[in-house]
Amino acid sequence: MRLDRESTGGVSPWGEAPLWALLAVWCVITRLITRVTYLEDPDSIRFALAVADKYDLTALQPHFPGYPVFWAIVKPIYVLTGSFSVAFAVVGGLATVLLVAAGLLLLPGNRLRSPEGLAWTVLVLWNPMVWLLGNRYMPDLLGAAVVLATVGFAIRAMREGRTADALIAGTLFGLLGGLRLSYVPFALIPLAGVAWSVPRARAALFGSTVIGTLVWFVPLIAYTGWEPMISAAGRQTVGHFTEFGGTVLSESISSGGRISRAIEAIWADGLGAWLPGRHLLTAVVAVAVSAIGGRVLFVALTTQKFESRDRGWSAFALRWLLPCVVLYSIWMVLYQNVLYKSRHVLPLLIVALLVLSIGAVEVVRKRIGRGIVASGVLAYALVAMVLVAQHKEPTAIAQVVEHVRVISEAEPDLTVVAVPLVTFMLEVQGVDATFVEVDDREAMALLNSDREAGFPIVSIGMRLENETPETKSTFYHNPFVNRMWPEIPLYVYTSGH
Image 1: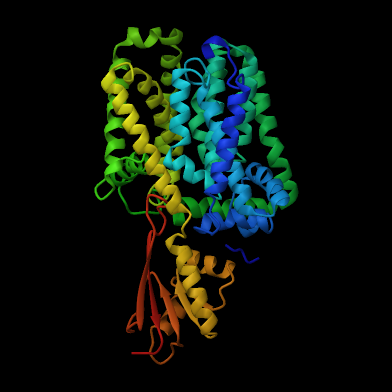
Image 2: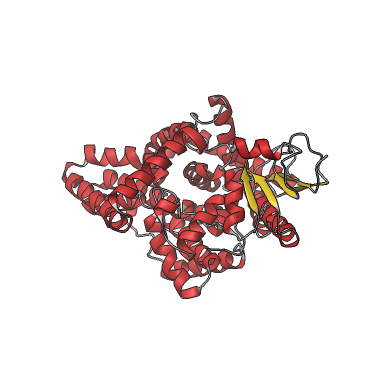
């Protein structure tokens, strides 16, 4: 198909209905206004195809594990609206609201109206990565909301010993496997803590986890078939870890380099803070984040003061979040593509935002602190708005697709040379050409021979050997909008030289 463009007081975070309704309207409308109507990368195309064409695990629409929970949420909205960009934006807006609610489970007071709740809400609503992911055709943001809620209910179950909280945590954890499987390690330690420390909740925890898993796993097997599903799972798992997944096994970059890239993703992509070459506004964000983070560290070291706030809920929650962060960080750095896909740091980013929420409340107690927070929030929001506006413009690869489409319409015998993911994007979007993948040695040998090569040829991302291009173009987008392929050269050959 061608695609075009407790909870110390036991207060429920849903107790302030008018505020929640207003928040939901704001999130959905702003995400609809800033939705993207082009296909920005291969992963986005696979989810768009799954929703707008056919859900097919064997055709990588989307790739294993298939994200059936996410698909089941987006698909009905697409059917109602007839637009996959609208459907993904609506889900992104609702996921933002759910993320706010999930975070309140881990903050003092558990309310939007609390100082920490207000700080958390502002930080989430105007966070650059959260907003960008709210407009992407991806399940990351909804997955982050669910995994944070899972952890929140698990921690509350341990704190208050309520079986109902364990039941909710287990159900959400079961659903998480069909929504964002790579986030599962983040929730493992608090769930193990519930099983260990609340014996009467074990049956509820295990039973609800099984039910939450079966809800999506049984339909997936029934629809795909057992053998096709196992085959797709095997191919994708082996490929992800050893070939194309950007893991420690498939990339030559050292562990130190991977850690550095992950920290950069949290700091710059996630918080919108300064790196060399970025706008001065990002420096204001960096100063504010550093000041607030420093205050959190100081308060944490003064244990008596920290424990006294809201009967120690913050300290209790953060002590359980720390091992979540450590375990997920190890998993992410080793086995996720932190080199080219900064979205994998999202669970760590939301913990950072929780900590900053608590710190902001401490900092504003002093006049100079109020100035730091106010200027930091303003710069933070402006950075997000700039990035969101840039996100509406096509990425480098989307520009390449349109450029090659124009050439192909004028040149019916066009040959395009590119890596497989790029040829996939061109074919799916209806570009009519003969495609040669760079890993096809025999075809590349013919193209690199003056006697055999057929012209015209467009080469994307690399020059051909023994040939001089007639023209060269380079397409760009801001890498802090999307880390994948921010700069792509394109060479056009009209005859042999």
